Length: 130
Ligand code: C2G
Image 1 (cartoon, rainbow, N blue to C red):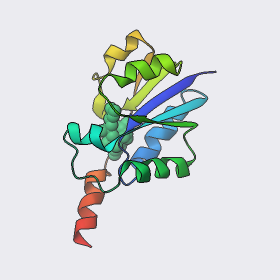
Image 2: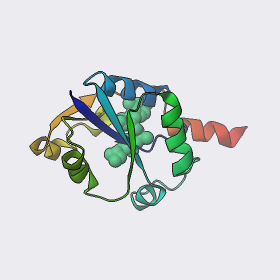
Image 3: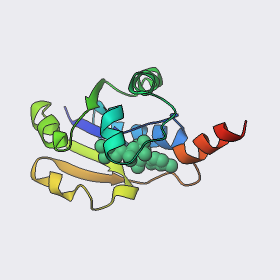
Image 4: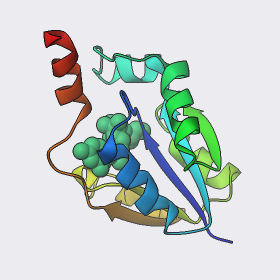
């Protein structure tokens, strides 16, 4: 079987996220989704999230697309996840093109087409105005 992993914050889970999860799942037969912890995101400058880790994990679970959900808590965790979970493919949206090429030492790296016209930032802005 081919094991695929993808990561993200997934704040206010939207169609762009669902598309990338579906495309990632289609690359194999077992999809692991790494959801970033609140502290991990704060440390990389994402400070205005609308949902906490538990809410973001719950939305991924409800999507039914993940075979396994893990939490990403520290920089450098991707390599140990790939090794520990025997991952064959790392997949992520094309906004990260080239950024994860270093993982190709450990597994196949695939950049998936990003969905234009929708983002967590847009949805957060909408929430501000209602
Ligand atoms: N995405 C997408 N289209 C959008 C928005 C997001 O395809 N319109 C994809 C991103 O490319 C990513 C996933 O959805 O693959 C999650 O996006 P974010 O929640 O913004 O998380 P991100 O900051 O990309 O996580 O370890 C964390 C990851 O390295 C990056």
